[in-house]
Amino acid sequence: MSDPDGLERLWTPHRMAYVQADSEEEPSHAEPRPACPFCRITPDPATSSDDELVVVRGETAYAVLNLYPYNPGHLMVIPYRHVADYADLDEKETAEVAELTKQALRTLRVVSQPHAFNVGLNLGGAAGGSLSGHLHQHVVPRWSGDANFMTVVGGTKTLPQLLSETRDLLASAWPG
Image 1 (tube, rainbow, N blue to C red):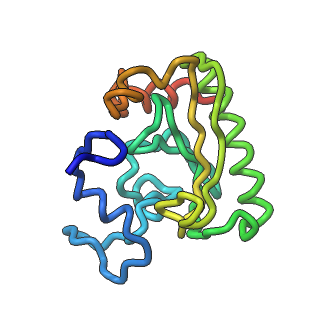
Image 2 (tube, helix red, strand yellow; image 1 turned 90 degrees about the vertical axis):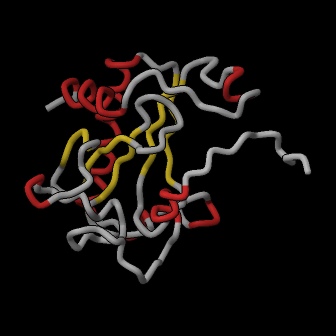
């Protein structure tokens, strides 16, 4: 039977822990960790886990590279508090998410000189939010022609740099 959309598939069963929402089961790790991967990152690096891609920490929110980026430099701005809806953010969280987003745009312009950006929220599973229980705003740098034949014909996205290297570049250029 032929593939209806013509894309090749890379099977990544390890990602199911991130995709399955509202799981009652805790991940099987050596130490107890929150089920939500965004909640594993805290304001204090000493008590945080899974934070090797954090670019900057604020008081109520942080910026982190997306582990599964659409483009190089794709990051997310996330409140520490586990909240699903933008309307449920308090004033301080709203202000810091907005400020970190502005800083992300400025930093990416300096480091990567993108031609444009996609910035947005997927609120709810039906909107495309695979981790819809914890609000996160995407900041995706875009370049003319960034969806080339590899993406269009091969169904494969190429990324020219390791995430850790991208994180180091952005963190060193981040204002403040």
